[in-house]
Length: 106
Image (cartoon, rainbow, N blue to C red):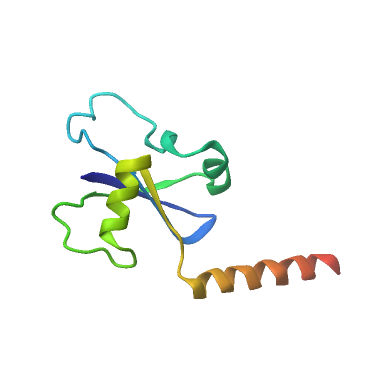
């Protein structure tokens, strides 16, 4: 299974894998690959930046996620969202709270 991986500047360490089951025969025309994402999710992510194309059949393992889980999601829904690790999520939440408190007293 081939897939494209995107990152999103608004979300540190969040990556979205988009299935490319017909690769390389799907490159003839321009396609909005992120169009498989639900509207609400896509809107919350902001503008995606293409990172790399990956052949999962040739990749023995992935860094932070289970390859079998990624493949299952790509086959069932066409995308997989890799959330940031818990420590990064906690840091992001703490920064948002601090920012909102700082703005309250501006």
